[in-house]
Amino acid sequence: MSAPIRLKTPLTEADVVKLKAGDKVLLNGVIYTGRDAAHKRLFDLLQEGKPLPVDLKGQIIYYVGPAPAKPGQAIGSAGPTTSGRMDAFSPKLMEIGLKGMIGKGMRKKEVVEAMKKYKAIYFAATGGAGALLAKAIKKAEVVAYEDLGPEAISRLAVDDFPVIVVNDVYGNDLYQQGMEKYAR
Amino acid sequence: MREINAKQITGVVKKLCVDANFYLGEDVLQAFERGEKMEESPVGKEVFAQLIENARIAREEQVAMCQDTGLAVVFVELGQEVHITGGDFNAAINEGVRQGYQEGYLRKSSCHCFSRANTKDNTPAIIHLQIVPGEKMKITVAPKGGGSENMSMVNMLSPSDGIEGLKKRVVEWVKQAGSNPCPPVVVGVGVGGTFEECALIAKKALLRPLGQKNPDAQLAAMEEELLTRINNLGIGPQGLGGRITALAVHVEMIPCHIASFPMAVNINCHAHRHKEAVI
Image (cartoon, rainbow over all chains, first blue to last red; front, top):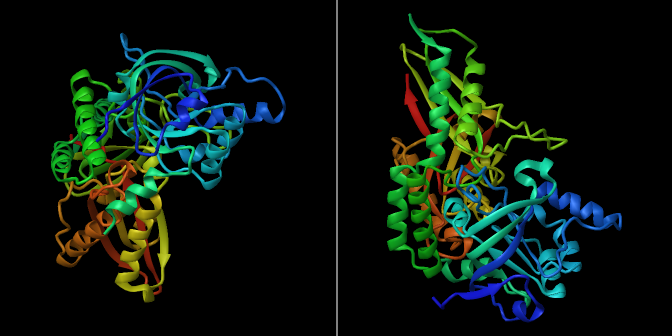
C-alpha cells in the first residue's frame, strides 16, 4: 500500500482535490464531533437563517459519540458511527463550507453528488476500533450542545488520526470499487 | 429450593456488562488473527491488524473496545428450583446494568424514542427470561450496538420460496447492509416459529461460540454455504473490499405454522460481544 498522506486541518480546496478514493490519510489539527442530534440542530439553525455555534468553513466533522473518559484519558473510546443517518443534513453543511466527514458506511447518492459540487471528502475510520482511535485524540472539549451528552459537539485535537478516503471530489467510491474487485 | 439474593444478580450483571465491553472473546481474537493472514486485500489485512491492536488496548487499559457499548441485552436461564430473595428480579438486573455502565465508563446509549432524551444510565435492559430445570441461574450479557442492530430484519417468507429463497434473502440482506454493520460481521439467522420468535432465535444464534456449527447436518451445511456466498460478495473488512465479509454464519431453526416461513437476520459487528456466568 502507498504511504499515508499527512493533512493539517482546516482543509482547503487545494487539499481535497488531491485526494483519491483509497488514499490513506493521517489527520492533524482540529476536528469536530457531531452525530444525529447535533446535526438536526445545526440543520434547523441553517433553515431558520441563524448562525451556527461553530464555524464549519474548511472543517471536518467526525461522526462519533465517544464513551466517557476515564480519569487521565483525553477521551473515552471514540470510533465512527454509521454515516448514513447524517445524509439528510450533510449537503447543507457542505454548502456552507464543510470540507470533510469521517464515519463508516455508505452515503446516499445526493451526498456523493454534493461532495463533487462543493468539493468535500468522505473519510472512513475503522468502525469498532474506538480504543485505538482514541489514542490519536489528544484533547477533547465540548463546544456546543452539552445537554446532548455523548452527542454534544466537541472540538478534538488530533495527532495522526488514521482515515481512508471513501468518496473523493471526482465521484469515486472505495466501497463500490473494493467490492467489485474482490467479489467472485 | 435454592435461594439466590437479588444483590448477587446485580453484581454478576454489572461485571458481565463491563467484561463484555473490555475483553474481546478468545474465539474472535483467533478469527482476527486468521483473517489477518488470509485476507487478500491489503486494506483488509490492515483492518484486522487494527482490530487486534484495538482489542489489546481495551484489554490492557480496561477501556471499552468500541464507544458504542450497546443496549444491554440480558439472557437469563433460570432454574425452576431457584427462589429469588431480597429484591425484584428485573430491578436487580437493571441495577447491574446501571452500575456496570457507570463504573466501567461505558457510554449510555438508551434514549426516549420521540424526544431522543437519554435515560442516562443505559437502562432499561432488554431481558429475555427462560425457565429451565435445575437450581442454577445462567446470565448472558450481550451488549448490542446500534450500527449492526439497525441492519437486522424479520421477513415473513412464503413456504413456496423454499430453502433457496431463504438463502438468497440472507445473502441479499448482508449485501444491502454493506459497510454499515462494521464487517467482518457475524450473521445470526433465525428460521421458523412466529414473527417474534424467529427474531429471538436469530439473536440467540449469535451467542454460540464463533463458528461452532449447528448440530443438525443440513443446517451446518447451510451455514457453510451461506458463509461462502456472503464472503464472495467482496464487501470485505469495513466494507473496503476483501474476501472476508463475515467471520461466521449461525443458523437456528424451529418448526413454523403450515402457512408460514418466517426468517430473521440479526447481524453482529466484528466485536461479537457476549459474556456469561452461572450463579
